Image (cartoon, rainbow, N blue to C red; front, top):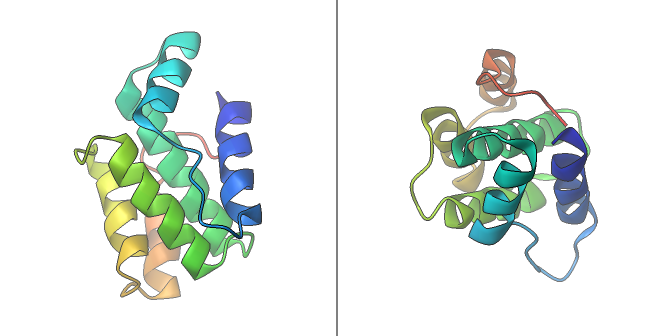
Length: 112
């Protein structure tokens, strides 16, 4: 699953045209292939985009774009950790210290 998540995050780090890579169907497919819940996939993606942003591999704009797609891919209903990441990245009101603290919480998912 880590490779699939990493590939998605790479799309957002390289994307310059605003295109999306994460869809509800993508979440379902990863869930089925790896035998995990869709919520775990959403949490793993949230953790990965948060980590990429905190570590400087995903700028704020692209992190916000990925967070917006996360929310859509979850059909506007996210598990608590993914929701916290969405809120932190989408609205741009969280400090870098707040984002780092959220990253340390980890949400129970592995970073890609």
